[in-house]
Image 1 (cartoon, rainbow, N blue to C red):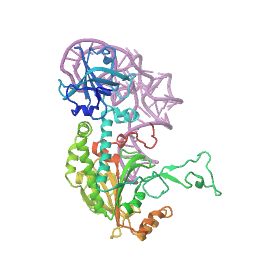
Image 2: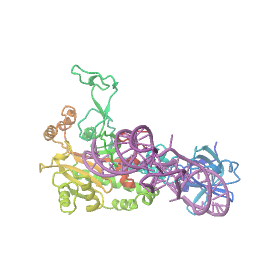
Image 3: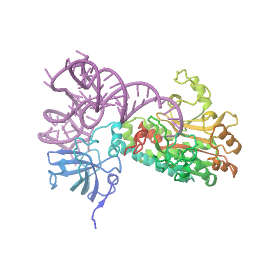
Image 4: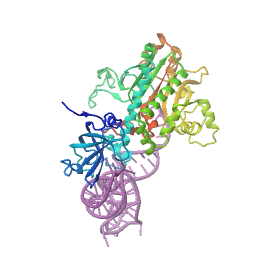
Length: 469
RNA sequence: GCCUCAAUAGCUCAGACGGUUAGAGCGACGGACUGUUAAUCCGCAGGUCGUAGGUUCGAUUCCUACUUGAGGCGCCA
């Protein structure tokens, strides 16, 4: 039976144990400072929170000369000692060690890729298995966790059911981007039919299949029974996108609400985002302070303001009007009917509005087949939420619930009616107006933290020509 | 997919009309000092200048191709 408790750094720093209580803890050395007076200070981290706890190691420890003085960043150690009020500034509590056991040394600290200095994110991506040991990636990871949990929390508290939609899909016609094909064919010996075409009847699923680009269509089926549903999982796009805001594999949150229109949709999106912002501000103040100090000084103030402020709403037509009157020259010419280019979106949310902006009612010709046609015959009930610095973090719409209108759109836009028969069935049997949207988790966390590249928000980024680790 | 830029020490970067021994900061290592906090100060080691060709008496420097990385655009979340 152990006499001591093993606690996390977070618990200890929060004062979970009374002074003088014996304690045991495990973690990794963040830094070590020696005094020739015969005392070393080890900052120990275990990832439970941003800060490390200070370990005081005196030279009377049996392995002081042989081991303690050789500790470098990220050596793993076990400490037994007791918690005491700190004599130094900077922390309330510290641990006086009665024993320190080295669990794992760091080989060749001179070439260790995450040495105790600032590194570029580009370098850290090349050592993605070691980068969680940096303050930057650890903080982003904790915030990603808070944001994810807060999404579930908000939706669950508001009557939504989490639907586990499939990752493998036969629907290749969602128009949301290029797909990764899923097959167990031997690619060197593809079975052919009489016409010489690849015979997918012989493939695992007996048809062509792909990784999903969105759970939306499947979620809509469940929405037409459970009323308020959402998906939250990985999504795949085989676009050869080379930007700071695209990944081939990313996580998306897609709520879908029945008997709801575009305004209900926008309101849900806004409340969901505000809840997530609030949760991060409450649960990760230390991590956010780090981003404010090293990445973008505005990240905390802007989130704080947003929590208490409604997002700006503007129609596409109004946006075009403002762009035309802006007296600014854009690379891409502005006229009603164009798809907004990045420079236009940036101008709208960064310069015109200065905070996240909901743009609604886009021309139907630049949007997906399932979006509900407005009475003007020219626009659809779509919405994008644009965030300064990141661009589109949410895309959504009220869905076309009228069978005839939907069929007409499918034909006009050359979408495969055959593979979508089941989707059309939803309009034939008890259809109802409904709406939903997709939030890119990485873009959301990128906006929250100010970290510019989504490759640094997801643990192991997958992009074109890059799937290491 | 298109365009642009980059590749020199473990990391971040300088550098040279093409010409002996290629520099700095950080990190590592050694020392001084200190209840220290990204400590401070002193010192030491560390390089096939991305790969393959070409031009040249001579290329890390110029040219070409390739590889890798980054950024912008498009597509979107």
